[in-house]
Length: 359
Image (cartoon, rainbow, N blue to C red; front, top):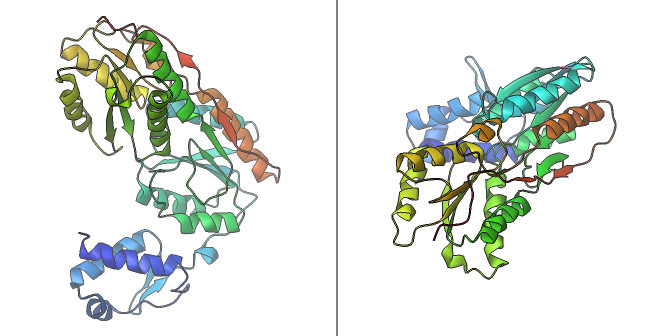
């Protein structure tokens, strides 16, 4: 059941994004909202506070709360030399290299990057978008947050589209939006990885996938289709789904259920290399030998995976090409040229973490 403040917040937000409440229109008073929704003053104030922090309403001291005029607030500045980059993460994993490659391209043309992260949280994404637009960036490169879920920030993206602010998505794009996007063949590549495990002789495979992002959904679909297209029954597979906000213990506890099975898996394929590294560490602590007892695969070809013991079989995410194309693409859009979506096909990197099952 939703909290009272969420009910009123979502109702008002829906009325704003649908246009039912107009720009600069005054909201009902706290007393009126309490009477209308039959909720506490605390809930009303909390809802209004969050709407204000999301820049959907604004306060005039002594007068009340009003609907923000987003179109009036943001004016696109084509003379700006700053490009906004919004990523789910910026300080670790593959993201520093991706950011560096984008920056190396735009810097040659006199542009600088304004970088922000969302920790894969749509409310943070909203704030980052608002901050970027407030800064009058020349264009935006966005990695969407929780891209497998309904997008609560459609109103801002619609304004960006209407005002023709240049924007490129990377890794995924929200449904109903029509911006260029640079993606990977996540489903096909995961299918290829699982079929490689089949070729080695594995049948009982665990697939662990992050399902609040489209990349994870597509990779999971590739895992399932690999079984569907083979003679191996799908009942031999094991699926673990998790959210980006879950800690590793949540995943580890689910993994234990399958590892302790009477017929345990002989291979594990992970959503990405970051997860695979944690899984390998867990297995080693449990005295498993990799790949003799169990094979492990990742996805992305993170730099550190070639230095692990054993080195990790994975799919290569081409940070150089994707960063370069994102930088070149946003410059084209800023200067009024066309840029069309690009799809990469990651290549398998076979290393020491996979082998034929010993039994």
